[in-house]
Structures are given as C-alpha cells and as structure tokens.
Image (cartoon, rainbow, N blue to C red):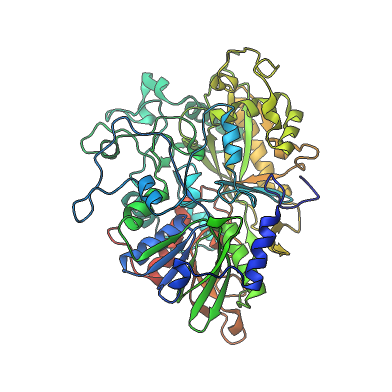
Length: 634
C-alpha cells in the first residue's frame, strides 16, 4: 500500500469504475430520470453539500431559484431516539414537519446510521462504512497519496458530518501572507448561529452554571475536562521554557450545550453535548450542528423547486453557449450507474478540495473547458500534524489521567507566533472505538501491519498482552495518552494532476521537510515533557514497512488546488470565486466564465494555521452573495 500505489483507499479497485466510465464515454445509460427530464429548467446547479454548497443552496432558495443539488454521498443520522423528543415543527399549513429520516425514506433517499458501538467492535462497522470505489455509500474517505493521506467526507452535509465542530478565525497576518482579503468573519459567525445554532465552549465535564466561566473556576478547577486542563497547564510550562507566549483558549464549537436560562436551544431540541468523544464519527445524542439538518430545515423540507440527487458523482462540466452541461453518474442503481446530463446558467462547485479540483481537471481534458494553467497547483496541508504524549504524569511521578475518550473531539487550543509564523495546537479526543488500535500502535506498532488486510488487527483478544487487565475498559486503555492536533503555515506547494482518470497529488520537494513540521515536533516535545509524558509521533510519521512511508502526513484540513489569484496568471478564480476563462488570457487576464463559481476550500490560497471552516464559510458568503444576493437575517 505504499510506493507501488500512490492513491489507495484501503481497498483495491473493482470493475465498477471501468463500467461507469464506459457508460459516460459511449453515452450508454442515458434513460430519462427526473433530473434529465428537467435539464433545461434549472436556474442553478450546486455540486456538493458542505459549507460552501449549503451557503449557495440557501442563497438560491432565498431568491426562489429552481435548483439541482448534486451530492456524492447519502444521508447519515443517529440510530438513537430521544427519550423525551421535542414537539415537531409545523409547516405553513400547520401540519407537523416529518423527521429527516421519515422525509428521506418517503423520497427514496438512502439513510444510514453513524458507526457504532463505542468499543473495538465498532471498528468493523466503521470500516464497512468507509468510502471507496467499491463502496460509494461510505462516509469517511481516506485517500492515500505518496507523501500525504487526506481524510474527507462523503454525505449530505459534506465535511460537517466528520469535522470537530470548531469555528476559529485565522489570524490577520496569516491572511495577509496568503493574500486572502476582505473576509467578514462576523457575518460568517452570524450565518453559523442563524442557520446552524449557537456556538459554545465545551471544556468542562458538565455544563457550567451562569455564575462560572472556564477561566475562573478557582477551587472548582476539577470541573475542567482532564485534557483541557492538561493542555492549559502544559502550555504555561512550555511557554516559559521556550520563551514563546502561548495563549490557552476554549474553542467555539457548533454543538448544543445545556444552558440554565429559559428558552434555550437545548430546551428546543431536548438534547445537549454528552461528552461522548466521538464527534468525528457522528453524534449519537444529536447535539452537533451538521449541515444535513440545516439543508433539511431551511430548504429540503419546504422547497419543491429544489431537487436533490444524492449518491451522484459529477464527472464533467462543459460550457455550451451561455449555459453549462453537467454530466454525472447516479449510483443509486449500482452496479449499473446511470449517466445523466443537466444544464443551468449558474454552477456552484462545492465538492471539496479533492472533488472540485478533480472535476475541473477532467473537464479541461474531456470537454475543453478553458481554465487557468494554475489549476491543480497551490495545495496546502494547512500544516496539519498530529502526535501523542504517552504516559502522562504529575510532577510527583504519579499517573495523570487526561481522558481522551471524553468530551468533544477538540475543546481548547494554544496559539502563538514564532519565527514570523503562526501556530495552533489543540487537544484532540480519541474515540473509544479506537482505544484498542491506539494502544496497539503505541505498544506494538508492527502489529499495525494487519491494517493491510483491513480487519486483521481486530483479531487481538482481550487476553493478549495488549490488555494487562482483562477487565480494562476502552477509556482505561488510553487514559494517560494525550493527542495533539497542530496546525501551521506550509508553502502551499502541492500539485494535483490526473493520472489517467485518477487524481494524484505530489510535491517537487518532500513536503515533510518543510520547517513547519520540525517546529511542530519541537513544540509538541516540549508540551509532552510538561505533561510528564513521552513524545510519540504517529505511525505514519515514523513509518511502517509495507504500510506507511516515513514522514507521511495525515491531512484533515486540505486547502487549495483552485486557488484565488489577482489574475489567471496567479490563480484559478478571482476573489469572488469566479472561474477565470483561459481562452481570453491574451486580451484580458481577468476574464471569467460567466456563471461558474467555486465556493469551497479549494480556493483558499495557502495555509491558515487554524481550523478552516469559518474561513471557508466567510469566503463562500463573499462569493455567493455577490453572485446571488444576500442570505436573509444575518
């Protein structure tokens, strides 16, 4: 799974892809569908349902546009029912609005459940639900390129389904260095709260009463989540040792939290964050503000003019006069996907960094869409880096429990500047279902070779040396393991290309040699020492023969590939996400394809050194509102 295959998804390819490509190439499978029959009727087509796609859909809906929303994945929801459910909302006629699952079933949309249970056996469910070309119904898509692995999501709601709920502004100096201008973060935050829900800090084991704040707990400091406290205290020690000013802050999370005031969001939804430590796997008590909920509440449940085509993979975009033809494969009848072509004068690409870049590279090759030579370049890892502090101890040498299986995935950060660059380090949870494999990777990393056979590592029994105590819980297995999630500034030098029909990513020089990663290791070693633990890099960084090359990065915040530039000589889109028209390069380097927009993270022209969701949303608002009109009530 290394060297010989630069882009693997943990399973090998099968014949479905070849059959699907053949269908597109020869025009087979063009029987009429609802989308095809109405192909002249759409005012706009939105490709993807992540943050940019949701913003575009909301804005178009507000203007009463007829929209087609194309999404590669399915609906994902919790299998759990609330013990005391809230009263259903009412539609304009006074009838109860059906739950999302009921509505999806009535429309013959596939609905799937978050992976569970929350112990080792849950990994079987998780792995069966991963996305790859043999399982297009999967959620987590883990792409393995030569120098970096990238995790993305496939589902209605996009990255919101698996991200860690963080809303963090990039620092002004960082934005200046990458040339990203005129972002209205205040408006982006208002969008989050109006169309998703109130943001909360969740750094304590219980919701705090109104008279307490996380920074002024005094003798009630024990209420802090153990890892939130551990990061705060370690940052104070490391800051003094390194001579770097590190500021600890609770993160703003898009989750429902209990509040003892009247008429709160928790009262309305009858739920709140239960600190289950599994945000990236799906929230069982329904407390996360995922975009599937947003789209259903504000658009799908009430708008007959909006058509959703899930489980649909966009292949190409072709310019035809003043409109665009979008050809996609509808996989709802796999293994016989249906090729469908639709038209609209406005296209909003929001398929994510990998998806949007791949669609445009293929479109340039197959339909002659004239695009900037910069297409595919400028990929940034966002300086993403993970590491562990193992065996955390108190100053007296006794065990210090940091409880990574409890709380939201990210709760707090320390941010700082050094060497003219910005860095962010967050605590990161480890879901309980990963406890066994995490312990195995720490104590016996060579056993991870079972990953090559997908489920091989699950053969470990409770009586193995991995469990010194056969009655040990998952939480106990790793309760002295702190997981760091770090971000910084790389040089955005990665380049996407197509190898045949397969997306590839590489760098001219090893990206792992960039100074940002050496600085990460220096800082995280110091923080680990301050926690009384031993610094341990992730297995992908240490390398594992036949599985991982040494210094392979894991990127959870991919950026770029269709970057913003002042002209088409510098980027793929302008500051408003309008795609440059390369056919007019000689006469007008600012010429754009009218009606063609990119509104996802692929336009971000460099590393943000922060969780990118709020920045992507601010940029999407800037682009969409110029193209369509303002979102109401923000």
